[in-house]
Figure 1 (spheres, rainbow, N blue to C red):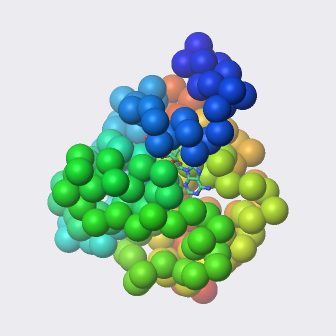
Figure 2: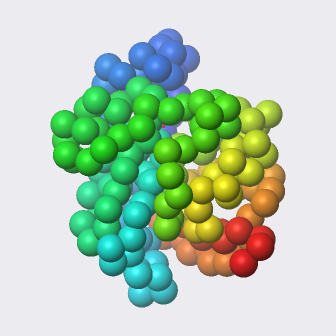
Length: 174
Ligand SMILES: C[S@@+](CC[C@H](N)C(=O)[O-])C[C@H]1O[C@@H](n2cnc3c(N)ncnc32)[C@H](O)[C@@H]1O
């Protein structure tokens, strides 16, 4: 909790862009995320799957999918991500994705600790656009508000570890 308050205070003084471009962000919930993803791999295989890591940061979450082909996407950390992971990375923001779409279809899109940064007014459009590029969406967050108004998607699986939550959605057409 102390770390979350610390990050909120930094946001007050810096723009989101400044913060993520100029700080080496490390997710304080990483251990929980690793646990939840390991557990989820008993339900779904990621072997040889194409994954888009949306809001990829420095690539900590991408590195949990060594069996897959992962592309990052982040408007502020894409250069760092490419250096740290050797993966490709799109530089699109949520708004860019809504306006211009993604580069291709993906087996999974995963967004870990990123959706709280999407303005509520964009959420429904973002969810619609993502549904045009994947049938499988994984959202990881500690913030329940993030998964409000996830239109266009069906919640299939939910798991929680130490207040970190994993939500797995598929498109309604499946
Ligand atoms: C809390 S970090 C999460 C990083 C990583 N996914 C993780 O779980 O450790 C949030 C990420 O969202 C990115 N971000 C901030 N604003 C964004 C926006 N408008 N569109 C897309 N990504 C954004 C930041 O650059 C940052 O890398």
